[in-house]
Amino acid sequence: MTALTPPPETLRAPLVVEFPFTRSLGPVQSAFLTGLRERTVLGVRTEGGRVLVPPVEYDPETAAELRELVEVAPTGTVTTWAWNPAPRPGQPLDAPFAWALVRLDGADTALLHALDAPGPDAVRTGMRVRIRWAAARTGAITDIACFEPYEAGGAPGTREPAPHSGVFDDPVTGIVAPARLDYTYSPGRAQTRYLRALSERRVLGERCPSCDKVYVPPRGACPTCGVATTDQVEVGPRGTVTTFCIVNIKARNLDIEVPYVYAHIALDGAGLALHGRIGGIPYDQVRMGLRVEPVWSEDGRYPDHYRPTGEPDADYDTYKELL
Image (cartoon, rainbow, N blue to C red; front, side):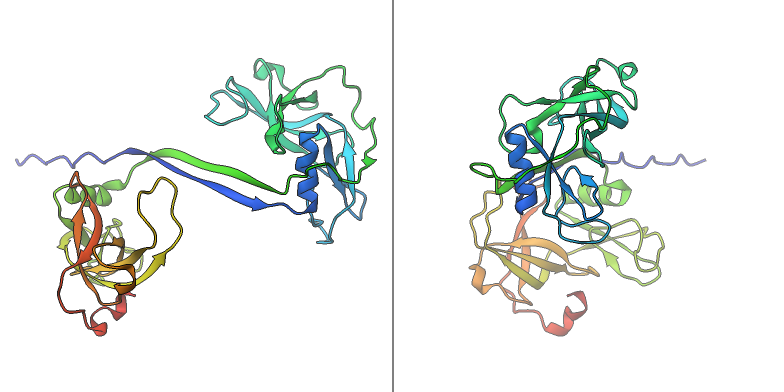
């Protein structure tokens, strides 16, 4: 009886996707965020008389433009909530807290924010809360540090929204909102084999048994035929530039001078092109059909970029199906 060889352990690694999202503000959002800086909560009134907090610039029901700003109370009522036992970095509070939808007095919609409470037993739908303002305010939703219980807050709806001009000194006209997603990534069996082969300076693809296309990087299945790709095929390492773009904006934390070229490269024997940076040649000399080879990273685990091989350019007919 022959013993089966166990498959190699699937790779796992932490992965962080992070970027700053910069946006300009229209008159409604500008007034709302500037108001928070001044400890004032503004909503917008629709043609039907509803007060929306946070305010929007167009009625979600009629699409009519909205400009009638009103001030609502800093107290409100919890409409629903969920307990967060393990806050993540960057969340409003370090200790466990509740995410709550709070309908502020005078508003007809609810605002999502953190509710500071000693435990889930202290939170309930219908409880009265008030805003806890941040000590330092800059004109952002984080100017509301959180909500806190406020049992002396009176009955909901006892304060009518008051008209507000939305005019403040030094209005906020734009914001930068950081976006971040961090998780543990597992590439699966097919890409694990691909990454392990790269560490040996080999490029490994997988062939579809139906259409015969070789996928690099392999996906474990053919997206066209829907069947498993089990046959492993070594391709490259040389290839052909099929198309490319010139990058003129320097990315944060990327030590590459602009302009540089990012290209689709069809490795010899592969059924589709992969992404790669082109180096070793002026950016304005990169062209379709250019023959290239990998330049490996210092640790030898992956191609850092591709450089010209010195071969004649590939004929267009040899790569036109891989554009």
